[in-house]
Length: 57
Image 1 (cartoon, rainbow, N blue to C red):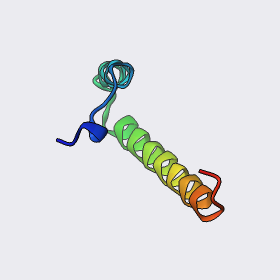
Image 2 (image 1 turned 90 degrees about the vertical axis):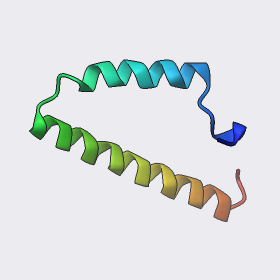
Image 3 (image 1 turned 180 degrees about the vertical axis):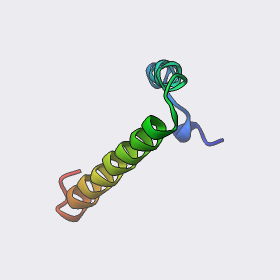
C-alpha cells in the first residue's frame, strides 16, 4: 500500500474505538449508521470539490 494511504496512529485508534462501538449494533442500527456515514462522506467530498474548484485548498 502507498504510504500516503496509510492511517496515522490517531486514525488507527479512532477506527478501533468505532469498531468496538459498532459490534453491539443490531441490523437496523447498523443500516442507519452506514447510511449516516455515507451521507457524511458525500458532504465531505462536496466540500473538497468546492475548495478545489475555488482554489482554497
